[in-house]
Image 1 (cartoon, rainbow, N blue to C red):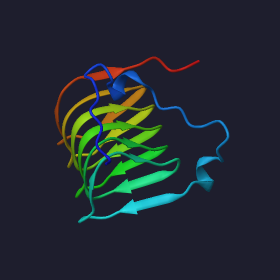
Image 2 (image 1 turned 30 degrees about the vertical axis):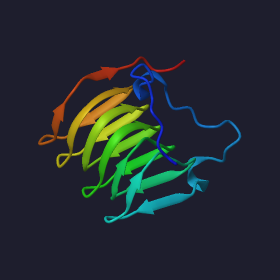
Image 3 (image 1 turned 135 degrees about the vertical axis):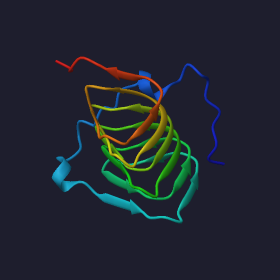
Image 4 (image 1 turned 180 degrees about the vertical axis):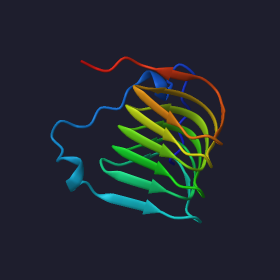
Length: 133
């Protein structure tokens, strides 16, 4: 029902996140908090802030994504801002990415800004894209 098969060429890192033009500023955004124990098999999309501490096999798209220490994502992430404290296997496409010291990633990341704390475990490719004009 929620599952989609995507070709290998449809990679999240190739499609940048763009906030809808008709949406309110970030301060007015909804906040979704999915705690440990939440399991999703499918894609999750939000036009606000998503704090994710559960487990998902699928793609996450939001304006702001926070993968907490208990969060496990197997899929692709697209957002304006991404903070990763937990586990990720997939791709990230964002403007700003912060990888915390407790994060474990097997991912390809494309962003304008990437900050990595000492202690983070990363396997994959990092790509710094030029800032959009």
